[in-house]
Amino acid sequence: MIKLSKRLQTIADYVKRGARVADIGSDHALLPTYLVQSGVCPSAIAGELNAGPFRAAKKQVADAGLQALITVRQGNGLAVVMPGETDTVTIAGMGGNLMSTILEEGYAAGKLDGVTELVLQPNVGEDDVRIWLLEKGWYLSHESILEEDGKIYEVLHAVSRDVQPSASSNETLYEGSFLKLPYDKEVLHRVLLRMGPHLLRQGSPVLTAKWRSEIGKLERIIAQMSASEGTESTLKAEQFRKEISIIEEVLQCLRTEIPSSN
View 1 (tube, rainbow, N blue to C red):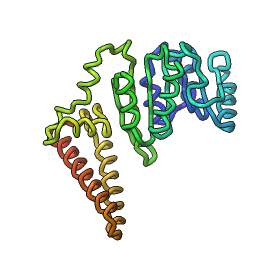
View 2: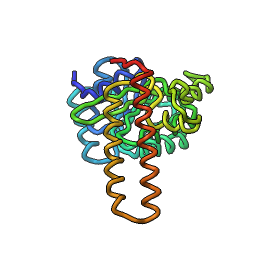
View 3: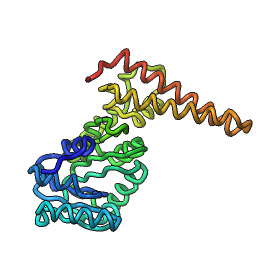
View 4: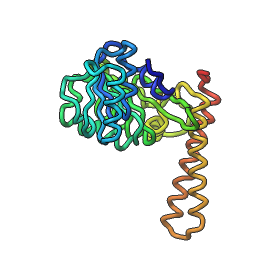
């Protein structure tokens, strides 16, 4: 059986046993190969747009002797999937904006009909994905954050309204009252979308490290802007300072209010 990276293993661990899975942007098809080899999934689709990874995925599946159980298809996003063909969709290793576009186009084309589970790992722009899930009525059931080879990744696990029918529970997830901060509901809502409601409730050194790094990036941008005398740059720098202040206060809240899970 193939061995997955820590990132891919975290994704695999979320996939429901017995689900027919479609891995979009599958690259070398490592994830679907593992899921079928390990008996988690009875079948899988590996979708890949680019010719090189598509050929690598076909070779991976052939080398594993799983051509009868894993279909490798070349195409853009969820175009490789037929409606009702899969129970779980996994997408990993791309920006949140692109991931949301793939999900939206698939949703509009009916490709998510019958899908009850999404496991998503955006490299950046996680808030874009959370916003899409919230707007489309998907329930964000779990989140993980991990560090591997010097990079930090977030994995989001969402289930459909058929599995989690209570819309109010989704709204409550993002209401943020557990953060004892002097902000209105709208600001707290934005904080949870950006930083992750489950991740903030759990707290972890990796989460803190991620947002300390983000503060450092914002400070460097502000320093670069200080050389400019334009009004727009001044306003943008002030916006970034407010953003830093909010992140700092959230991190302080995590230390004082939320016990670490580690």
